[in-house]
Image (cartoon, rainbow, N blue to C red; front, side):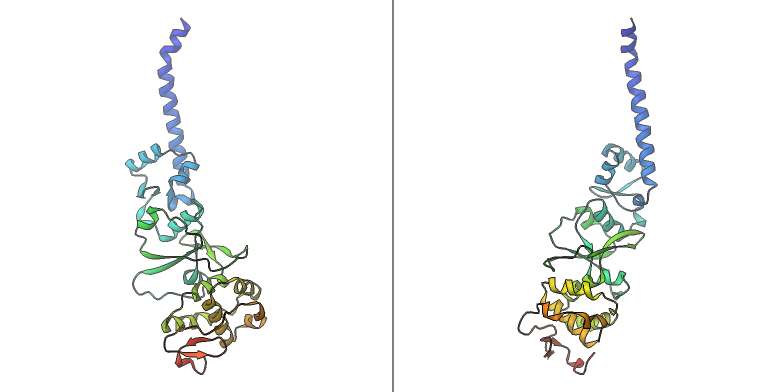
Length: 278
């Protein structure tokens, strides 16, 4: 008799259990939505790690609590999303080995700026061909991402990156010393050379020990020769503390500027207008 009653009440218990669990999960998701990470991009990986099922996510999309910006990524308010939110999700939620580097990193460090002509370019760097999810590549971030996938250094020091705040989130960024070489590796024209000269004038505070390590490990002859040319010509303080005998500068001249003048010391072509210095 008691067994029969249990059988009759089992469906009621099951309904109550599902309702209780549903309310618990909804409460948990609402709690997650109150966290700082939820102000940006939330990936399905991050949601799953926090115990939120795809079914519950779908429910919140239908109810308007969440919006999809592509397969595997959701936001609270798409109108408030900036590119930094997307990069932060790659770095912190998906562990994609990509960092803000080159000119973008230097700008964040206060050492350079990009002219506001057209859409802003954001320079991302990697060295192991990382997979960037489709939602990141296809969403309109109002900037143009440029991914430089190049093993620029034989070996990088352990403290090569720093975490900086941008767009309201934390980003993994190349330190100024590394970003300088990433930037100089892309200098291939007169206008780029002149921009680099202006930027390098502000790099007086670079750390000689880290610059020495990076210059020894750097695989770009162009970047190394340009760094030393600017440091020498601009009389940057860290230049005097470098041991040039341990830095491989290759052999033979390198063309940086077409129809330029060959600098006899560093064997690179520079604008003829700089014949008497920068």
